[in-house]
Length: 315
Image 1 (cartoon, rainbow, N blue to C red):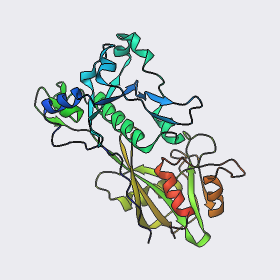
Image 2: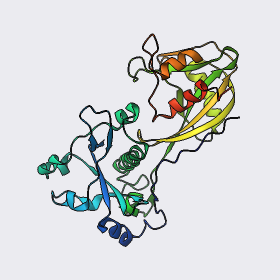
Image 3: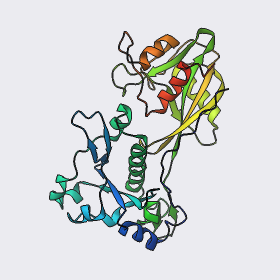
């Protein structure tokens, strides 16, 4: 049986025990080795070559940003790096940038994070850190007020908690679990892929869907596969997990075996579903399919699921 290697999402030590101490967070930010990445309107500020074939995070010192009057003190604490120093993320909106117009000379270029993830031009570590920052900021934008009493929530724990100023209730960042699955038909040596309306032309990928309250992973895989493609599956096997910050999901990758093979899609979920032979999958992975069809890039868990089938690791 294939046992996957669990890929860690980041090298950082999140310091979850210490980050509730404001003095500790302040000391980390003041450390000369501290570095800050920036999201500008939820787009990462990066370093890229002219052809945009390679990209990396653009790290700033506290002094780099403070000289333009940017609110460095509002940075989220991501953790400490093995090489020393804290790592932070500063999420800027239009208002902050309007008050510091000169900062634009260093806050460039900005690129959509989803594009970076799908194109596979940024390393896993940097992509993970930007994803962590974006997920945190999205949560903060939607948790400014208490859902119980309506009072304002204030930020604590370096960005990992909000506390209600009225009733004192604590709120913490959320993660939404999503099953993402490759369905295999061993009798015909093929697998099932779908194409959604939001996908780029000719891109095919695995099926996916949210876990519902009180539902386990296997049941979610079975339910979502039947709802989206009308296929009944069995023998659900765990493969790998991947944080996916759009906005704050955890993708739980699985393989499953098809009990039925007749496709009946739900057009509200996907535009098309189709069985692909192993040979076709190999061509898609190699970007040489005669119809120009392709699958997600190497940073996506969908590709890992598909690659495992292509390599004969899923029977």
